[in-house]
Length: 299
Image (cartoon, rainbow, N blue to C red; front, side):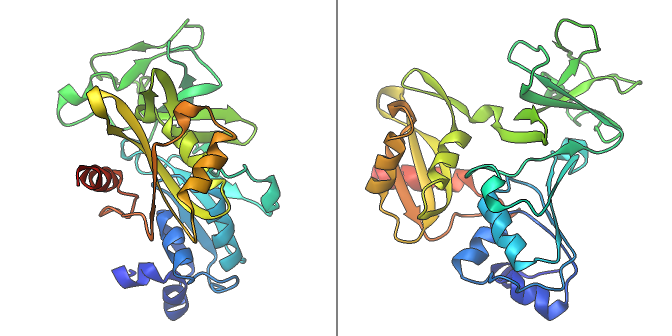
């Protein structure tokens, strides 16, 4: 297993141990790129590269694919309640310009034995909405029954809409688990659009934090970005953003956003960091970012 220092230089670890299979969160890629430790062709022993736990951006996928050209690269998705991962999308030799622009790699299609249901805000089947899943990998419910409230739906073909259930006594495994993730269903399968709780209201307008972050990553000087909300004056919600990159000029980035987005989607501040903080699981630590920005504003 890699040590903490090895995660800063995955190519060196792969070469030293002649690793053939890699499985981690995508944040490792961003960190290695910043340290210039992921040159093209540096991991020839890798045969399989799997990423899971947070969205895999197209920029991350392209960097890893160039560094491990002989490796099969797959993006996985799944909450713990569906036994870690439940979908898979394999990247082919698609040219970079044909990948989703500045977005994230699709999460693909469900594993055999699972069924999907995408519902809109009214519980009706839709091409875009909340992903719900049932099947052999679905857990039977939380240890504390109170946590089950609102987490399951009942829906069968022919029903007008899905309905919430209060209990999970489900001997036939017919209930749907609500993942809390927004997805879009298209020819590539499922694309992850963000968490439902990432939908926020700023200045009376509803917006997606993931969409703001995606637009920030479109700037050529930015490697990665996170949008989040902070409490503002008079209990208002304020939009802020944090990014990494080389020679980033926050004023220039925000000006470029104004050319593409409505004013209510423009962060009030853009903070540039050397690295985005990671939690114990290696994922971007949004709570730490929010605490950092709140403390900085109070000074």
